[in-house]
Image (tube, rainbow, N blue to C red; front, top):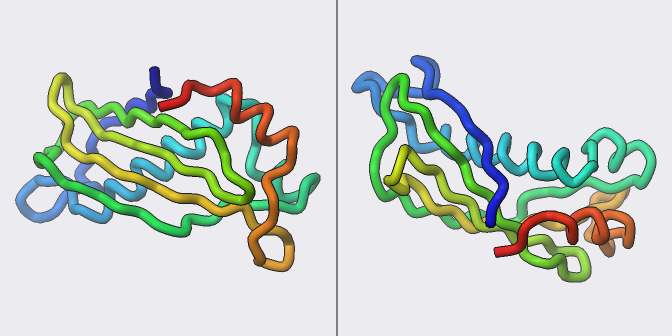
Length: 134
């Protein structure tokens, strides 16, 4: 099971040929990750202000399988693995209907106010545990 984030491709997302510019998929999956945290009951502003943490992208591996085009309706599916000490791994896919267009593996790291890696707080682990796992 995965969390789903739906979107439509707008003109601003495409290149001159009407195909989604490759870097915009990173924006799509970022939005889906933010929505996943919200689905777990975590607002990023609260994580920052109350707990003094943020999640920063450490690594992204992307496979582009097929193009999306202007006005396509897409679904980003996000699966979150159980968190490590300070690490959070996600698998994300962008779909158009029955066709998988993009596969991404994203590694996030929990950082404190000093910008250094820090252990993910227990209450955040519990909230993440309520989300579907890969």
